[in-house]
Length: 393
Ligand SMILES: *Cc1c(COP(=O)(O)O)cnc(C)c1O
Image (cartoon, rainbow, N blue to C red):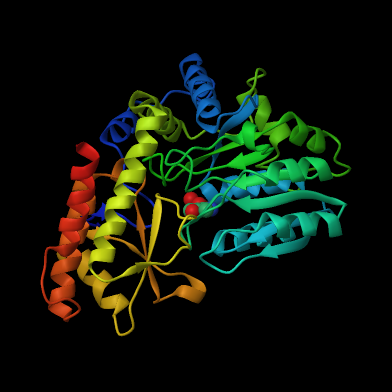
């Protein structure tokens, strides 16, 4: 027989999963009821109401799909695109690339709008793509690109899409719960997120939301949604008023997201966003005091995922291995084109705290001095601490 389960107690400061709030772990250990039990139906109702508030949307069809963020990406895209539909997808990192792959697997004729990694998408490029492709049914965009640390400005793109009759579809996996997300104000028609980034929840369910205009496109489809599991017209019969069985809802994960949302509204959105911003600012001051610089373009950085550029000669593997083995801290390495060139530090959900910023910087200082990257310790921790001191005064 295998041994008792006993993974290390890690501090999760990578691109996700993020540290899980103890209240959520407790909620998950609650006894399981049936997926049509009246008590579970009210759990579902609570989740839908709070998700609308968090997304800042009136969309009736707003619920957690059963699966991780990628499942929600797939659920969003597969309902909107039919084989042969043209889809404009913005790609400035891994997740835009994934969305484009998903859309093409569902038969979309994908047109990409690109920006260099570390920079946001230029709305002018989206407009040019819409002008050149007036038949495009959707524009896909990533709000917080977890592979690069870029936060996409959202002011103009929604109106452009409406003007052209294309549906704006937004990936909010690394933004929801960490920075403001205002779907209705921005003109977003379909959006999705995950639980394991800024909701402080384990991975397993993932919020999605569809506007009336988006549902209109689904109703007008000439062909059935290619995915049975994610067909919103069927799933909605379980989550909406009809309450008919579609698949067995993951009960414990819905307990978890309900508790995660309660924690978010207990804290208050403004306080929560301010906490994320401050943690990110302190972390950034700390790494800069250690002689490093941020990778994502200034002014377009998401506080939830901080990308740090390695200097020439730094050993990515040695630093991250020591963080994990000697300090029980997980941070992320770079993906794809920036593998070995950047670190990705999540300041997400329950993890975005002064304690975690200071501990990470302290650990980095010990490792950097051992590897000869710095000659004295304290600068990073000092700079971060000063940011917290300034904020407190
Ligand atoms: C993590 C992430 C996803 C995928 O979520 P999984 O939970 O890993 O399936 C999609 N988009 C973005 C921006 C992400 O950060």
